Image 1 (cartoon, rainbow, N blue to C red):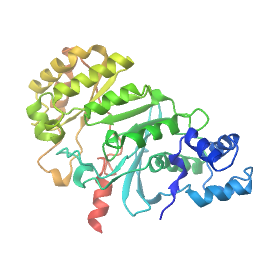
Image 2 (tube, helix red, strand yellow):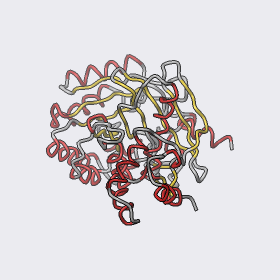
Image 3 (cartoon, one colour):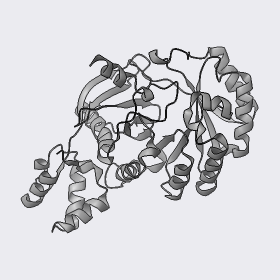
Image 4 (cartoon, rainbow, N blue to C red):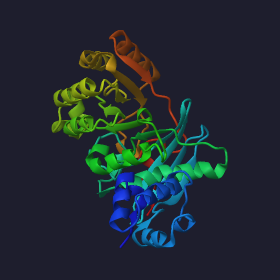
Length: 352
């Protein structure tokens, strides 16, 4: 049986576990520093920790559970990692170089059950949730990659937008956020963490009540129920009206902005009519909503969809702006290395 990743423990959980096993509370902070500041890859490197504690940790936990299977680097500096888990499953993690720092996109599930008809991630059904440790370890592996380059670079931003629906793995998501936010660990500020959801309204409300102060992004992709249901089957269970109420609650309780993600699909959702409907839908949310217009990355299995023409993209953007909605056209990263989330993983599995 595989041992649990120690990265899955929050500092409070680690402290409680050590006390329960006869060690001092102060030992937790010492171990925490080794993990996240010194970034050791084996317990034997914790030379200041007494041998009995090191042995206890080795008997119950592991530090590294992810194996780098493939690494692809784009001309723009984007790096896509394909990691193999202990059970043989494959997940993707992406490092992106932004003007504001180094951002990592993490995966939360093996496969996805949301079933968006345009998405590569959903080509393979969800087989399991990732543990909080497996999610944290994606960040740690990317950071170790940066450490090896010796340029002093650090992961500064995290987006939970990889394979899977983060709010469908809610408790592990919360522990992951607590770990990477910890001031004496990776110390990634809450305002630099963004969680994306396909629209699990009840979980948006629950997430709001946790008061974590991290950013929220909602994958909308259509301005009306008929169209959204056609391209995102989740809309059958959670229609736009319910999703809007959840977003209103988030804004009211947190006073934070929501990013609306909108992938532009040629002749599907990219007409001026949809732009006007979207502006009308979002206008009641005021300046606390921001639309991210995303160029579509074609997927072989979803050949019915194509990228919108540049003229349509600009027209959509202008219509939103004139409608009083803040928006931008997302800058693309890694277009030469299977940029769409899930592409690299699905291609590797098809080879097996």
